[in-house]
Image 1: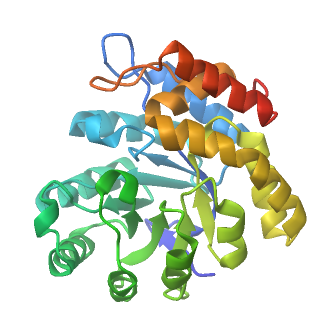
Image 2: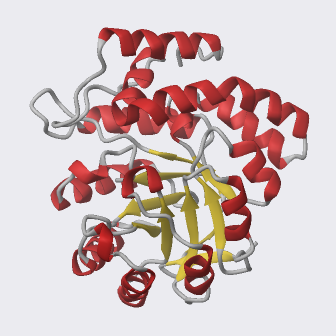
Amino acid sequence: MSRFYISGMTSLTLGGLMVPAVSTFHANGDLDRDAFQFNLDIHLAHGVDGVLVAGSSGESALLDDEDRRSLLTWARERVPSDKWLLAGVGSESTRQTIARAHDAKAIGATAALVISPHYFLKRMSEAALLAHFRAVADASPLPVMLYNMPAYAHVVLSPALVHEMALHPNVIGMKDSAGNLPMLAQYLEAQSETFRVITGNGATVAPALAAGAAGAILAIALYAGPAVRLLFDAARAGRVDDAAAIQVRLVPIAADIGGALGPAGIKAAMDVVGLRGGAPRSPLLPLSADELATVRARLEAAGVVPT
């Protein structure tokens, strides 16, 4: 597996187990630095290999550019230089995406994760998406990762687009959160010494790793970190049955918490296990009593205990 050199100092292998950090807020909606760094310290203690800031679990669509700069700065204070610090920089605007990549570079991020523009969905043709990703990759001072997240972007990156972008010298990989294993197999055909595919789907992480995914960025690791670490290590060691057994236990918490309830569900689960999730930012609402009961039940059934 290739290694990427950042700022001429540190080499990192693209892969491993990473978490998409939640963005924590005070009651008035302002960012909560103490809660954010508290959570990062716990995730790092669980042995994660990197952190994504301003991803979907981080309520990226609800963050302004100053929020992103603050969160990255606070993450950089906690994440060691031998671990990945990914910055979600995607925007509806190619220009703004590039500007965010420059901000992230200045703060010390390792790579930029770029989701598809999707507001003008009917005009996001293959040609438009390719032009966008090429322009970002050409101009970004950071290595770029593509982000396939159909649940939120309502766009599926085609294997042809992924194979094309995998040839770009500044594109080092992609995060695929769709959980579509046949499609993942086609993405994996694009892997090379300079391009790696990372799974972002907690319900299918064991088979994705078995198929050849280079690593994982998983929301379930935010509230079930030790169990996910065990699954990841078992899969990496070729202990297929052990990984599959843990996967079966974790599927309900992936599907019924993060998958069904989004950032509010993820944050509630973190609160239950002793981390500091807190409320999502408006217009997202906290969970109802019934939804919170479901979260507790799924965590208990999965054997997830307080940190």
